[in-house]
Every structure is written in C-alpha cells, then in structure tokens.
Image 1 (cartoon, rainbow, N blue to C red):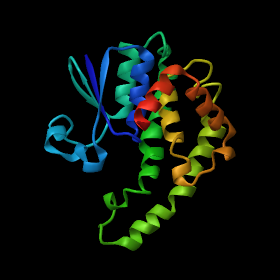
Image 2: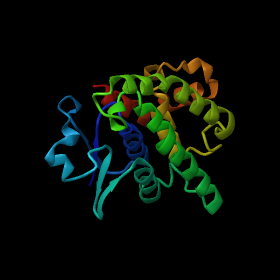
Image 3: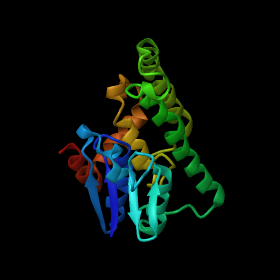
Length: 208
C-alpha cells in the first residue's frame, strides 16, 4: 500500500487529490504541524529534506510534487489522468508543473518563510520579502490565466495532474491577499475542482 505523508494546508494536497482521484490503494498520514513533526528525526528518516509530501512506494520513497504527481498518473491514474502520448505535450505539462513548483510556490513561501533567505534577526528584510508576495503572486496568476490556461482544464479538454497542483496553489490566494475575482478562469477552475467528489473528500480531510 502507498503511504502519503502530508501537512494540512500544504502543497501535499495536490498529491493527496491525485491519489484519491486515481483510486489507488493508499494511506494518508497527517503530520502534526503544530509541533513541526516534519522536522523530527522520525520523519527526517523518511525524507531528509524535512518537507512534505513524501510518498512511500513498494520501490522506495518519492519526494517533490511534480515527481509524485507524474508517478501517480502513470502508475495508477491513466483512466483519470490520460498521459500525453506526444513527447511535446508531456513536456508542456511538465513545464506547467515546473513553473508551479519553482516559481509560484516559492513566491508564496516568502510570506511566512522569509528566514529561509535571510537571517532570522533581520526582521526588516523578512518584512520586505513578505511585502512583495501579493504582487508577485498576482503576476504569476496573471501569467497562468492569460498565457498558460487553455480551458476548461489547464491543459485543455483533458483533466491532468496539473489540475490538482494548480487548484492547491489557488487555494492560497486569499491568504496571500490576492482577490480570486480578478482571475475568473482560475476561480472557475477552483469551483470545477471542488465539484469533483474526490477533491471534496480530500479537502474536507485536510480541513478536519
């Protein structure tokens, strides 16, 4: 059985949704964020990066959301996440997921994780970093809405592993002081995702 380690409110929601959508046999293990369980030795033995998600498979442990999503889609979810047959189309899918991972998620993290980039004592720098989050995230969402989103799903007609990823990140809009109403395509995508039973179940589990 697969085992997914996650923190509520984290990017691990995307992998959790993918597992639920795929119908794979899995166990979701919620870490206690209040005590920073993802930094404890027991979890670091699973993922030395001290981050979530981590997916334990029968072949080893996978980390990093784009890798986990691709593995779930190819190993368990072909009927739900049709894998692109054309190498260029697959590269385009990975381009979207890479952007969400390397740029959008990192911009969001500056709001509460400034000490990753500057000394913790440098409160002015941390505040300055956090003050840029709203505009940086808005720039990202404008790019996605205007240049990357095809519709009705992000890659077009087919639901793909990029959709749980995008949905998870758009869940952070309000916390980053971004108005979802300014992004009608992304807001419609969020509503369409929440209308999927598997998504609703996982979102409720993370909120519990």
